[in-house]
Length: 314
Image (cartoon, rainbow, N blue to C red):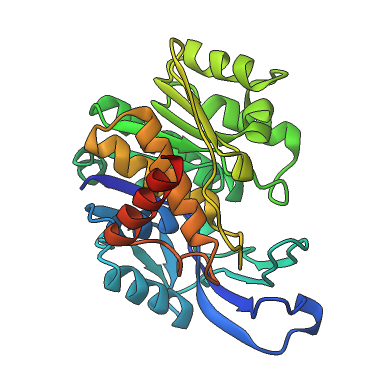
C-alpha cells in the first residue's frame, strides 16, 4: 500500500444545498469520515490505499464498504460488529452560512476500536500511515489504538502523516491539547490549520507552532489556511501557495481533500510547493460538489486544474 489509514466512518445524510437542517425535507445519502475521504481521494489519483476500522453489521456499514470497494480502497482489515451500529451524521450544506450538524455516534462500532484490531503487517507494508485527531477523541480504547498504530509505524520505518482534525464537540479544548500534543510528537508530516497548531503546541503564532513541532521530530509542518492558501516549513525553508478559485457548494471535506492532494505529491517526490499546489487544487475541486467525497478529483481533473492555474499565473 502507498497509504494506510483508519478511523471512524459514518453514514451521511446531507440536505440539499441551501436548505437549513431544521427545515430540510430532501436528503442525499453518502458516507462521512476524514480518513476514508483521504483514502478515496488518493485512490482516485491512482495510489494504492487501504482503510480499516469497525463498522456495524448493518445497512450503513455494508453501504460504506461498497463505496470504498468501488473506489478501489482496500477494506480487507475492516471489522463488522453485530452488536454495535454504524454511526450517522446528518447535516445541511451552505457555502457561507454556518452548517448545522447532528451526530448519532454514541456507542458506535467505531468507538469500540481497540489495539487488537490492528494488523502489524498491514501497517508495516505501507509507505505512509495517515491518522487524525478524530479517532482518539472517540474513546479511550480508540486513543490506545492510535498510539499503538503510530508506534508500529515508527518501528517499521513507515512515515506518519498526522492531521489533528480538531473536533471540540468530541472533547474539551484542554483534553484535545493534551492528547493531540502527545500524538503529534514525532509525526513526520503534520497537516494542520492555524487554530489546530496553536491548540496542540500552546504557541502564539504559526511560526512558533511549526518550530515546536519540528523541534520534536516532525520533518515538515503544513498549515491549511482555506481561502488564504497553504503554508509549509521544514525549519530551514518556508513555502506558501495561494488558494485556487472555487464556486463553493459544500465546504465540508476540503481539508481532507487537501491532505490527499498533498500526500500524492509527497509520494511522487515533487517539491513542497508542488505538493501544496496539489493539495490546494484538490480542496478547491472538492468543495464544488455536495457531500464529503463527491468532488474529489481524478488524476485528469487535478492535472487540468493545475494547468489552468499555471496559465493564470503566466
